[in-house]
Amino acid sequence: MRAAVVRAFGSPEGITVEERPEPAPRPGEILARVLAAGVNFADLLMVAGRYQVRPPLPFVPGLEFCGIVTAVGAGVDRWRPGDRVMGAPLGAGCFAEHVAVPAQQAFRAPPSLPDELAAQFLVAHGTAAFALERARLRPGETVLVSGAGGGVGVAAVDVASRLGARVIAAASRPEKLDAARAHGAHEAIDYEAEALHEAIARLTHGRGVDLVLDTVGGRFFDESLRCLARGGRTLVVGFASGVIPRAPAEYLLIKNLTVIGIGFGGILAEQPETVEAVIEGLLRLHAARPFAAEVGGRFGLEQTGRALQRLADRAVVGKQLILPR
Ligand SMILES: NC(=O)c1ccc[n+]([C@@H]2O[C@H](COP(=O)([O-])OP(=O)(O)OC[C@H]3O[C@@H](n4cnc5c(N)ncnc54)[C@H](OP(=O)(O)O)[C@@H]3O)[C@@H](O)[C@H]2O)c1
Image 1 (cartoon, rainbow, N blue to C red):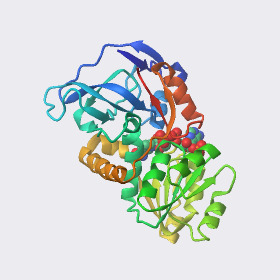
Image 2: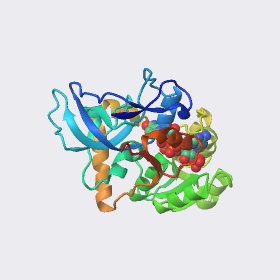
Image 3: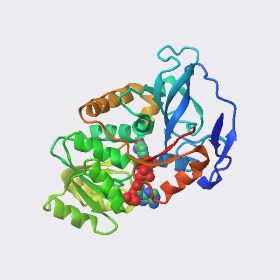
Image 4: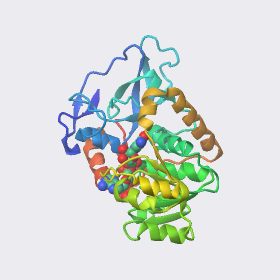
């Protein structure tokens, strides 16, 4: 089979396409033909050797996929060849024609989810829904989403607006703000053009927001704390800016704020039943009003490096896909 391969940690330009033996499913695994694989910020970190997990070199990147089961390993009874699956094998491997995935990190892709949505659903929509659930978001609350034109950001806007929140999207470019509006954002702030706390004061009549969902970290995290209403919560989802912020404890105390860490990767690895429940909740929302995939680009395996570089350049609206065939 053909696969994108990382031979040395570093820039995504070093990724090559190679012929590799098709993996055989080990006990407890399924083998799938990849229809589409979602491109995540975490792929960029993994290729650079800066992710929590550093796979042994050489490795095939790609965190998540949608595909068709072609074989099952010993001890797997829930899956049959021909089943449609979305999965996140955690050790990467999805930017390839075939991928082996542990059965507990594989989930049914119902016919109602098109391939291009299923290929990004676990990480983007799954993380967003899990985070909003942990924050116990209530209808009528105001949510500020950073990086709102990115993969998790668009999904967070989509899910929060379906849950009845008033969503304020924050992003760096008009086309990202347009995408966030199309996915249900009620207001949009260009945080490169306007001071965040001034924009939030204007949009909330000085009250502040109830919840922040932050995928960017750094300066955004610091400034967004000042945008919270008393008793507000912040969901720490990611640090796409490359800067890991520190929460000022005295400010949290004075305003009764709560900072909630979100590690959906760990949940995918260890709690498949929680992931199943998150997916069920998302599918109920999807049945009431279908999610649409915001596809920021479609690439062949040879263009994997280019797709990842576009993420590093902040050039992507929504989520890109690798289509191995
Ligand atoms: N905690 C979890 O379980 C979990 C799950 C999934 C993802 N994540 C993390 O969440 C973050 C977002 O992931 P994603 O896949 O949605 O990424 P993405 O599509 O690239 O979106 C990230 C957004 O961050 C903003 N950004 C600000 N500074 C940036 C910089 N220096 N370089 C690149 N982007 C920058 C960009 O929006 P603007 O240009 O509009 O600022 C970009 O659209 C990542 O840190 C990822 O690792 C965490």
